[in-house]
Each structure stands twice: as structure tokens, then as C-alpha cells.
Image (cartoon, rainbow, N blue to C red; front, side):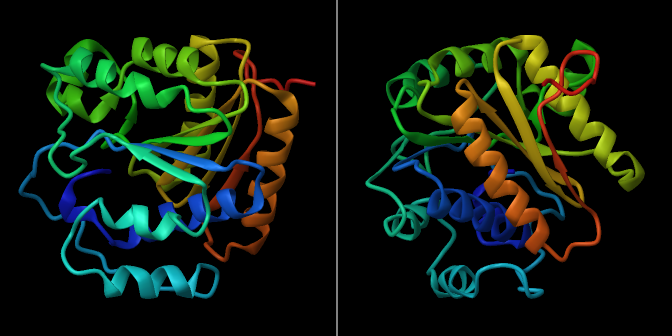
Length: 249
């Protein structure tokens, strides 16, 4: 969920701990950040401070607490230790995503999306589109990646890179596993050739989309270790699924 007010909150802590784990343990050498930053909304989100319950990085927690002000620019300093290059849309704190200017935003993103050997992280407010067009309009279309945009992101992705997507899940914790599986099915409904997996804690999931089997196996192995280490009661690891929900051999 990207608004500047969310910087360094508990969700950010989980998000960037997972990203750091992937980058530090994988063969990926570059990081591409597409924040889909939206204008400030007055609500009660983004106020939960980060706290290490014993399974996340102390260094990351210290980094977050040491930053002056809420800015997406800070993350470049953090990832300098993990990657050879860091690319994002500039100016990162002022480039907003809106429903009215979707095409302009994605056109501006295209030059960085094709980076080789990269983790390409796209961070919408909510995640992949859901429900009917009337529901999207009611909730705010700018919070979602439309299926047509997901296809664009997959098409632009280099075979040596990994697409990682933020996905907020429904409030019902009993439905979180099923909701995550459905989102992976949604990805494969857009492109049947890709490999997909996901990791979830509570109502937050991250979807991974890949074009090469060897790279998929590498990322899946990293997520498996992260899952074993995690102490969150409500967590789950999801592997690739087909449209009918059966495992792909």
C-alpha cells in the first residue's frame, strides 16, 4: 500500500524484510521499484509501528527508525547493500498513479521494466483487480492493477527477472489462503505460460511471477525457508497453480 504516510509502518517492515531476503539469497542483482504512489487519503491506515517479533531483520528495523521523514527515497539507501543497481520512477515522491493517467504512468515505467536479472516490485494500494467494474469504481480504480496492465507487466518482464506484486487480502482471515490461491489463478488466467508462487502473512500476500523454471525453483526455495523461519500464526506458502486449481507438475 503506497502512500508516503505508510513509510516504515508494520506492513512496510514485513514487505521490505521479505524483499531483502529474496535479494540477499537469490541470483538477482538489480532492483526495480514501481510504487504506484497514490495521493494522500485521510484514514486510519499506516499508523501501526513496526515491531520485530523475532523473525525479521533487526538491521532493517534500525534503518527504518533512523530515517528522517517519510520518503520512498530512503529505500535506495537500504538496497545499496544488496544490488548493483536500483531503478524507480523519478521524482519518486512526486510521481503519482491515478486512474485518469494510467497509460501515461505505464508508458513512463516501460524503460525500467525490462531490466535483466532483476526483482521488479510493483506496489499498488490494494493489488490485482477484483469484482465488477462498478466495484472497482466504488473502491477506487487507482488502487488496482488491471488485468490488461498485468499482461503488460508480464510481457515487459525479462526472462532472467522476477515480477513481485503486492496483494492486500479481504478482512476475513478464514478466507486468506483461498484468496491468495485465487490471485495466483488470476495471474495464470492472464498468461498461462508463467510460473507463480506466493507468500502470505495475515492479510498481506506477495505474488511472484516468473518465466523460467530454474528461476522459479530458486525463488520458491527462498520462500520456503522464509516460511519456515516465520513465527506469524497466520502464514502460508503457495506454489504454482493452474486455472482449475490443480498443481502443475
